[in-house]
Structures are given as structure tokens and as C-alpha cells.
Image (cartoon, rainbow, N blue to C red; front, top):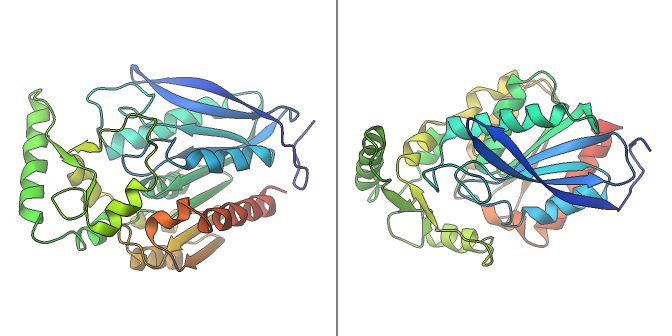
Length: 304
């Protein structure tokens, strides 16, 4: 049976898939509709320092129930993927992970190569907008609460932590050059030095952490340099495919000003939604259901 908009098949399987990349393995959960021979595919990854089990499975299940193939993966150095040191966020390396996964999936006979959709949230939302601006064979892109401008986000970093954060990030960067162990920072803390030092960020992030999966809550400090320098906002004007963006008005991680500027600069057909929520609310009811419903409606429109 071929896939077409309006037909909804609930039966699917979930298979482990390991993709070789630069001597390491990228671990994926591969959701496959049972009764659709050639399916559109949604490729998904999580935000900064998060594992795919942190609330993204709900999204993947709903997409699979709607008849889409889904590939949900952990970046190298995280979760089920290999790579040393652990808990490293490298912007460049994670973007190459996307290229590796896309290349593998587009060559599978059960996948419709003309219907590849990139899906990202938080930091990965920035990745997919950048990738969709560069690649020629992507059908659409979905970005929720996307990280778009590291320079703008840096302005919101608490000034009292800035000197020490930059010092540790620099020391870790130089130490890695000579093979020293990583200097780490907490991903999040209610007030102390971390990547996201605020009570709102702490409560929000910890609300998505799955207690059954190991997560140290620490990241190599040199990743802070990467974050502040990453500016996918400068690439979005090259986007030429349908895009869906959902942003949080009360977002403390990704300033809404950057999202508004990006949406204005996009040269493509964009569906843009601002919702009265905080960054991590989109992983919980009622915003989770609203996000999934909005995304499925978008997919039906552009894949019919």
C-alpha cells in the first residue's frame, strides 16, 4: 500500500537502527508503518544535552500512528550512541550526525525520497532550519522552540556567572587539545553556574528528564563557546521549502525576538505560531497535544 494524505494506519513497528559515522555509531529508533510500502519519513532529534527518551517518544508514536516513518536518534556522545568523551555537545559534529542519518535514510527502498521532513526542537530546531537551508532534497522542516541566535541568547546569560563560565569553557577547550579530561558544567541549575542557571530553566528541563535512563546532567564546558557562536538565523533567508515554527512567548532559553526576526527573513512559505507558554511547556499537556496536532495538519497540507 502506498502512503497518501488522509489515510491513517495505526500499525507500526519500532526497530533499532545503528548508523556508522566517523568510526562511531549513531543509535536510532526506526518507526516503520507496517502496511505502507513507501512512506514519507520524519527525522527527529532532541535539544541541548537531551536524550530521545526525554518526551520525544510521544511525538514519534503519534507520527507513526499517522502513517509516517520516523527516525529518532541520539547524537554521538549521548544516550545509546557511541563516542568519547561522553556528554559532549559539538555543534559541528552534531550537524554532521544529521548529514549521516539523512544520507542513510534517503537510500532506503521503503522511504519516499521526495518526502523527507526534518524535525527539531530547541538546539536541534536551529540545526534543522540550517540544514533545510542548505540541502536540496528536503520536503519540509518543523522547528519547535528553536535555538536561532547564540549571540542573542548570550545576552540573557547571568552576568555574574559570565567570567567564570568563559574561563572554564576556555580551559576545557585548550585541555581537549592536549588530551586532558573534560571540565564539565551542569546543564541546568536553579541559580549556580551552569549552561542554564535559572529556576525556570531548572524546573522546566528536569520535567522532561526520564528517570529510567542514565543522564549525568553535565556537559563539557567548551560546548558553551559553540552555543554562543552558533547563529542559524543568518542562514534561514536561504530556506526555499515549507517550514513550520512554533515558539514560546515566555521562552528563557531561545529569545522570541530571534524567532520573529527569522520568520520575517524566511523567503519560503512559513507557518509561524507564537503560544503563551514557556520553553519546556511544549513537552507537556496541553501544549504537547496542540503541537502534535499542528504538526500533523502541516504535514497533511504539504505532503498530499
